[in-house]
Length: 106
Image (cartoon, rainbow, N blue to C red):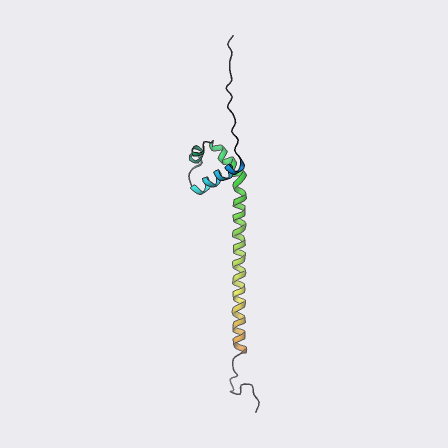
């Protein structure tokens, strides 16, 4: 009888920090997933899985920040318009009277 041995590959575990940094590196670099996977010594499919776990929160946060910026820009424009109206109103109120009496009675 022939005895067969099954070689068992040990499963590597990566901490969440490594996964986040790997995804961030991949997204910042603009390189294809296979190339980053090769550089890091992981399978390409792992990068995609990590991206699903760690990238969406960052993308959602960025979209939230962009929405907030747009809202603040609209509010800023409204406040500028209100300021300009107040300046014009103050200018009209403080103008001397045209009849030359300066508001004094004779």
